[in-house]
Image 1 (cartoon, one colour):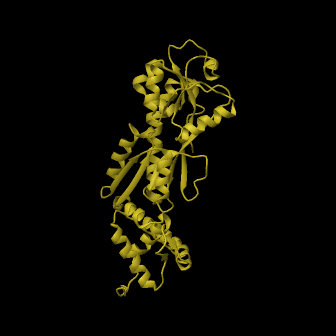
Image 2 (cartoon, helix red, strand yellow):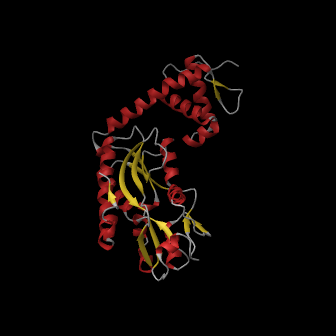
Image 3 (cartoon, rainbow, N blue to C red):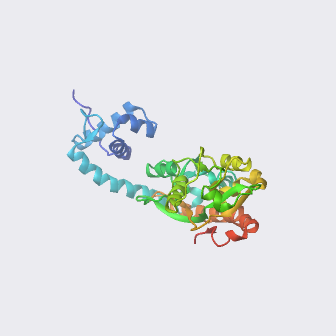
Length: 324
């Protein structure tokens, strides 16, 4: 069957959909990501192929496979689309008040106090901007940034390299041991597994859990554990009830205000270790917006977390710090 004559002008939409289809390997995945119907995605791809006069995909293969010409074309437009997105971001960065859309992701560590303050602040600074806020795990936020579903995020820095993302370290958050306040057993005996008090751990799929487990293995520590949870508040509730002990951080401890009268925070025995929280962005995110969020988040972290914890727990002053 003959195809319809190709439209005269090359469409940016065709290029973006081609890039997504090439990355995802299916029309259905591209449809889900863009919110367009499968038939609409297919129509745009056919228009692009008609315009170029070549087949970019082998349409008889599943999942979708690029033809040799399609691979060459993809290499060329990857660079071009990055430049276009960066130019658009820089063009809109001249005036924060004129920004139109911003998607921010954050781990729950900041969700209760600081993110609402940031949202109010940004709404006032960027009155014409549509905002989308996402709370999730660090690895999910990083994946969303890589897939361009978010513009910037505040996450735990993973052990592996960020590759195509940019990060600005914000906070050094040391690991600490939290025990029931009424516990009469020694900290060393508990951490080294010489008591019956179980270790309550973060879910193993979280970056923070992998960091803790890695350090414990390096130190040869092993403690009985029968409880795993992705939510810090639940861990703090269990420790406050005397059901066990845990390893967490001052930032997370500061969120557990209702349980703190029944908790006691201690330095991690032996060699100390910490996690880094960072502002992570796509390469094409506006630098002006990044600077604005960076400055405000540092003020919020200092006011809501660091200053109160330093006052209550002076021994944290040399380790729980903003990274300059």
